[in-house]
Image (cartoon, rainbow, N blue to C red):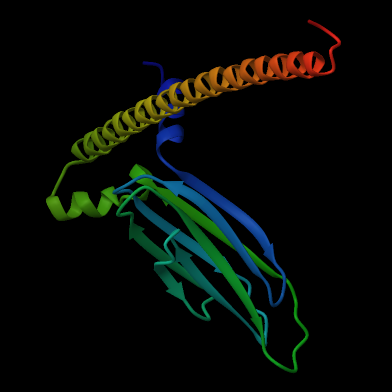
Length: 204
């Protein structure tokens, strides 16, 4: 396998994201990301300090559970492991104290997920592994994440196929029902008009 393919797979299945954004005073700005089950997520952020303004950082899931809550911090790190597949929301909340004119904050955020989020150097020191063994461990974890990602995509494809088949079946039965209704309505209309014309003695 060529180095370019390996690098592409690494970028595809190991999250690595650095962002710069502007946060207006007394506002809330959020980032959303879908993350699989049992995936380590780490983040590091830095925000320029402005007198009279504070920034809160929160990470929540779709059920409203707060995973990270840093209040009045301009610099810090966070980490959590997902319990299930979900969409996670990272929010920066600006607050301006009374008597101060608000200014926009510059926020720098660097997020890692999956293999890239793990500290293999610390793991090597704790387990007394050699550099080559550490690299093999990292490649093993990367291979496992690729397999899991393909399994997830296969499951999603199967779910979508089942949904399409179910939709096609429902559309077919609806079309048959609509056709029967139209045929019944047309038959009733012909019988009604025939009886009406007979009552008016327009036809025999």
